[in-house]
Image 1 (cartoon, rainbow, N blue to C red):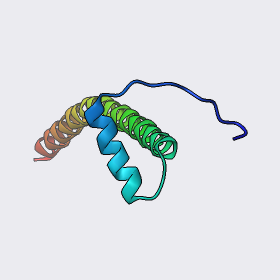
Image 2 (cartoon, rainbow, N blue to C red):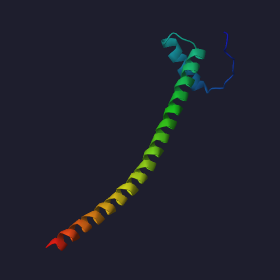
Image 3 (tube, helix red, strand yellow):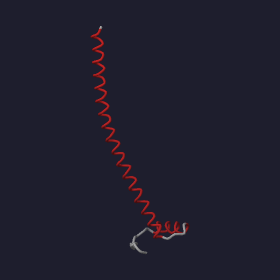
Image 4 (cartoon, rainbow, N blue to C red):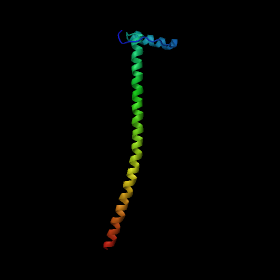
Length: 91
């Protein structure tokens, strides 16, 4: 088993029984089961972290977009008012 380290873990009897049932059905062993379970857990943690980072980024961008749209709306209103004023002066 090159590259593998042995670790000891403590599990409640009920959890160990569930694991033993799964490894029996899947024709594998406890070590392989625990390795795969840890990989799944770590991948899920990474996925959650990425989703949280994306959510935070989208929320920050939403605030920036709101400020930009308010600024542009005010500029557009100012431009419209100047245009209407010039039209009134032409009469």
